[in-house]
Every structure is written in C-alpha cells, then in structure tokens.
Length: 149
Image (cartoon, rainbow, N blue to C red; front, side, top):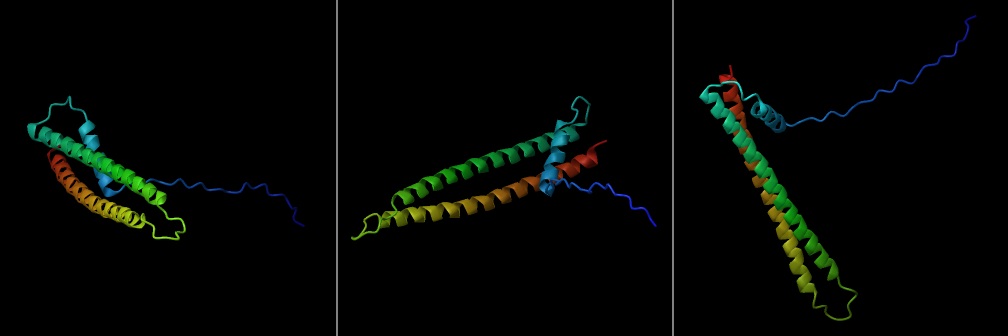
C-alpha cells in the first residue's frame, strides 16, 4: 500500500506585470531625445551636428505643440464647466407660466455644442501637426543614422 504523504504545495501564482507599450511616435521621440542628450564633447562633422540641432528643434516644436494643445483643451474645459453651471442655474422649475429663461438656456446649449465642435477640430489639427513633426523627426533620425560614424 502506498503511503499517503501530504502534499505541501504552494499555489503557483503568476504575477503578470503590465508592460507599457509605447506607440511608434513615442519610441521615435525617445530615440531622438537620446541622440540630443548624447555626448557633445566629441568632435563631430558639421553635417551631423546640424542634423542633431534640427532634431532638437523638432523635439522643441513637438513639446510646444503639446503644451499649446493642453492649454487650449483646458480653456475649453473651463468654458464648458462655466456654461454647464449657467444652464443648471437656469433649469426651470415646473412653470405655470411661460419661462423667460428658456431661450437663454437654449443659447447656452448652442454655445456648448460650438465648443465641442471646436474641440474636435482642434484635436484633428493637433494630430495632423504631430504627424508632420514626427515625419520630419523620422527623416532627421534616418539622416543621422546614415551619417553617424
């Protein structure tokens, strides 16, 4: 007869760490940042130095575009909050008579729709601008890779 031995097995728990996946554009910008932060004490040929300065300039444009977009987005959000508050303050109580606030409330809702339309347009323009700057960055990185010793 087989002897039964208690099995003291620890449950196997596998912890899966969520890896942050960077988009192609983010990886491209990280690579460009590494080149810009590289050792500048080494004597380089003028063409490579020029390309590195252009890479730094393009990264600066990307950062400024992001900051501008963030500021515009926050401004639109503040306007929306203000208008939502105004609309909520004008919500009618059950009227027994014609409420004179109704046209004003409709006008405020129209302004909210206009802000949302503007936000969509700005988001599209922002994405186009980022795409153009990232395309330029890709071209510069490829040139740098060809010229780098």
